[in-house]
Image (cartoon, rainbow, N blue to C red; front, side, top):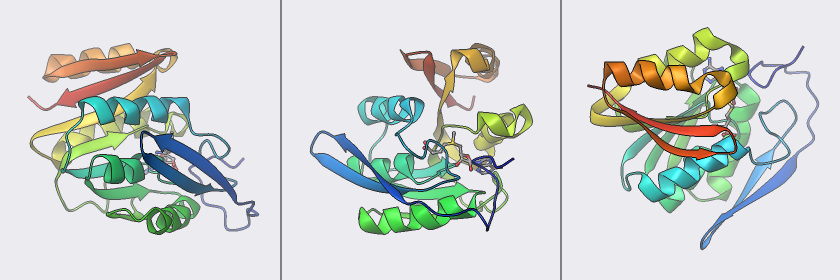
Length: 196
Ligand SMILES: C[S@@+](CC[C@H](N)C(=O)[O-])C[C@H]1O[C@@H](n2cnc3c(N)ncnc32)[C@H](O)[C@@H]1O
């Protein structure tokens, strides 16, 4: 069965355009079959970026892990003037994200990486709506290994649903160092964590 993180060159294409607005900023994002939340901006991703717009840092270097068609990185690039790298394992997502970066004229680049395998830089912020359906091993690796790719005082931002066990993930991070619940909305928790 096809999942939003599997590559399938035979999957047909049915392009559609999603709109997202925040204040004076208007975004048009191409989406397609085989991508996460292809028909509608995901409520968790929306909660995450709108929390970041209020409480996050401007003008910093950001890595968007599991970027999909690019909502998170593209909007942070524009609204927060961040310099953004975006990664995904899904090749279709990468192609569409590339087009969306160009169309929305953002200071960002996207490339393929299975989790952090192609990451050589360090970042001020790593942000993700992690791929829950890929399984706990993958999404916990995204969360736990993020600290290896953060600058001193770097921040991990992520969103997860209550029913997916966000409280236990949050408690584990809290034991290791600083961690804070930034926002709760419709069962989604936005978590900010810093390495100790
Ligand atoms: C929940 S979706 C979020 C997509 C997008 N950031 C958004 O907010 O709409 C998670 C993304 O992680 C990607 N992904 C899954 N496994 C991955 C892996 N091992 N390495 C990198 N990305 C992965 C999926 O392809 C998917 O695009």
